[in-house]
Image (cartoon, rainbow, N blue to C red; front, top):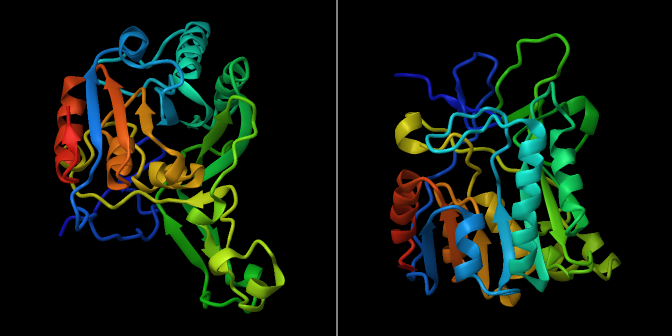
Amino acid sequence: MKEARQADLFGEMSESPEAQRPVRRKKGSPPVKPSKATVELIHGDFLKRAPAVIADGSIDVIVTSPPYNLNIKYSKYNDDLPRQEYLAWTDRWAAEAKRCLAPQGSLFLNVGVRPREPWGAWEVAEIFRRHFALQNVIHWIKSISIAKADVGDYPGIVDDVTVGHYKPINSNRYVNDQHEYIFHLSHQGNVELDRTAIGVPYQDASNVTRWKSAAGGLHCRGNTWFMPYETINFRDRDRPHPASFPLALPDRCLRLHGVRRIRRVLDPFAGLGTTLVAAARLDLDAVGFDIDEAYLAVARDQLARTGCKVR
């Protein structure tokens, strides 16, 4: 039986023995009831197509992960632009995203870096600073190790624990990079969030009555989100996009903003449609753009499984 390969920082695969024990999840099944959402897939460049099809302020939440400019091998995009050219392009699409976003909307921007270029994500954030307020910085944790000695007598931890996926770095200068950023941006930095929609239970039940904020026995999850990739066996079949994120990422972002306040969701770089699928499963209308027809074909197939209307 062949060992399942593990997803690395940018969706690449490794079979290194250092890759730790995988977190195995059951494959997501379609909702019991078909989605009520309408999702629009648009083949083309977001900057060129959006002005004609998205009205000003008509998008409540944007969840996206643009190309990182790390020379990732896309089939239809050059991911190795001169740095200033890449940042100028980032400025243009950030401005267009601002036009689309509603006054009390949220933009969740997922950005990764290479260990040898750690400023990259923050250079992107500085570009967005021209157009948005940075309201929260969330860390997508892909792998974590917790030593029993560090936590002592803690419920549920009986030994050292290592979970998640990573790609070992063959360098003595850098540690393995096991997280990415999710920048939560808004127009003024004052968007109220539904924090307990993605809350976690209190370990100590007495805290439920002690704290006024302990709604339903849950407290805020905070800004470190452990979300491993699913283990896959065949890269081309199971995850044909070179830089995708797990369904849990857009799902949490949408719930955190507050599902009841969302009319329409946008992903300017839809890829395999993960953000759009998350929206459809929550009965939220959505629109996604991508320049690669092959990715959109996969997205259409994924969306069909939710029962939503796809245009």
